[in-house]
Image 1: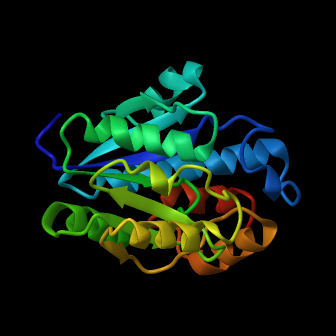
Image 2 (image 1 turned 135 degrees about the horizontal axis):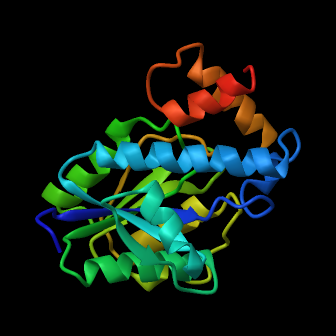
Length: 224
């Protein structure tokens, strides 16, 4: 472990056509969707790198994509995702980092390219300085874009109704039932559907000289 007290892990898939952002096809082609996801990843890496005071990690899948992520995220820790479903992959990734001695571990998605960096910084600060057990970043679809923990509690991840609007309320219910102290960040939106894509484009506006740079350049190349 390095000197940072909190590890921030981006849950990442290799950006291969037909395997990522498939719900964006149409309006995008599988190749365009994979290209956009690659931009999302690179922007998220730069966002985590800018945090300071945290260790940047890529929790990647599949196993044979390590060299790809070494190129996308130079200087980041790389750990392979392990588990049959999202819950087990989150639990195992966070547990592995906590087992190395970090006081807190955060898992974030790679579907929120324009998430304010301040939200991530707040999560790191909460786990570094407060008595909070769990920090959650709610997403508008009923899930979450971020979860940070001081301990790998299986109850927060096992048999969760993933990909449904019940993920966040069920996570909070289980956390409170276990007596855990929870802090929620401001809500944000994932980019999963064509409607989300339009919302992202509108939110980015006409600027092309500020973060998320790679995502902005993708849309500029397409004339959007």
